[in-house]
Amino acid sequence: MTKRNLIQIIICFLLLVLSAGCWDQVNIEENGFVIGTAVDLSNNDSDGNINISLTNQIVSPDELGTPTNEGSENPPFINLTTTGDSIFEINRKMLKEISRVPFYGHSRLVIVSEKLAHNPELFASMLDVFIRDQEMRRGIKIIIAEGEAKNILDIDPKPEKLPVMHIDMITDNSYKSIEIIEPVTLGRLHDYLLHKNSYVLPKISINNDGIDYSGAAVFDGTNDKMVGTLNGLETKGMNLIKGDTKEGMIKFKVNNHIMAFDLERAKKRIDIKVEDPKNMEIFITIKAEGKLAEMYGSKTLSNPSYIKEMEDKISKKIEQLADLTIDKAQKELKLDILDIDKTLKEKHYGTWRKIHKDWENKKNYFSNSRIHVSADVKVREVGSTDRVKEKEHE
Image 1 (spheres, rainbow, N blue to C red):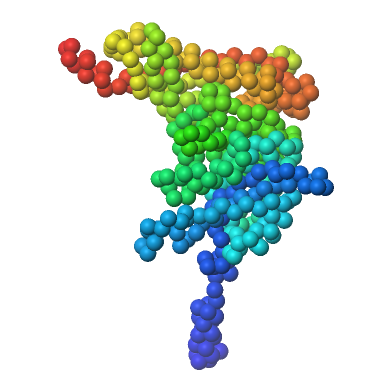
Image 2: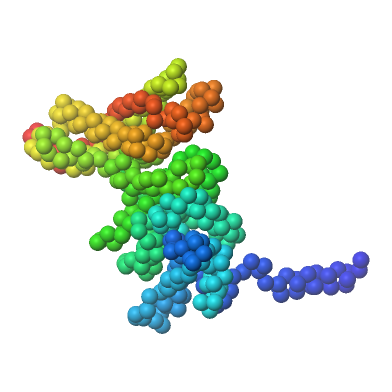
């Protein structure tokens, strides 16, 4: 090959590369960027088919606060609602109602109404469309709404500009509160749907102050149907038992004074006696550490016996929260939302293999088990105010 021919080939290659566009580029001017979706169960149609209502929150780039229109009174988003008997049909209908093609590549969350989640297998079937959609990222968060899901997208998002971004940022605060479970992504939910074990998803509702993001929705893994909820206290107990928490606040009383314990670390240990599977005994030990965040009363914390009294009170409170959740799980839900079966499988695989099909069903070994909880709390810090008092008395 001559030098001249080589140069010509290189030039042709460079021209080809420079003239080619990105194969997966998204034209901003031709697409409507969906940042969040709400899915509700609509009324049945004349043929008795179930109708689904889908609401997309679509960003209006021109209204997001560019230098030329910072004073615009128009919201930087629109909520577009369309109804149909399938998500696929709804997406096709939406093309006729908006000038820009909906693009889900930047979506942050999907909010599903309790009414839809209570419908057997509909929840899983609906989400299967999102799972298989190539535009939907696996990191999208899934939340269950009390009431109509689309109403959540109408909240006042201040200080944020977009309701979805406001909700998304609140969900990221889960590590600060043990009344909240960590966000569940579409990818993680896909794993739940592939198995038959029960699971929980975060719950959201509207109140006078805006939104209440606390508690959990409980799903039966055999049919992926929502069967109940956990309130804030019950969620605290579940998080403490499962060890799904690092920080949070626990209120307790000493001498009729309300105190606040700032939980910093919590670990759990589960031991199971499997000699008689029909009457298994489960022992849960929770070890927690933290500091005293708030206290009232005149007693000084320099007294070791007073600190010990506080630690005992906090331990008792943790045990009460855990027992509250266990009672709800065994007697009302009859589902192992505490992940005890995971420990059974890890430590006693032979027993688990024999009974796992009836762990939550039929014989329901989980509900018939006797569960005992003990907590051990250490208060590592007592705050600066009391230290000042100590210096004053030196």
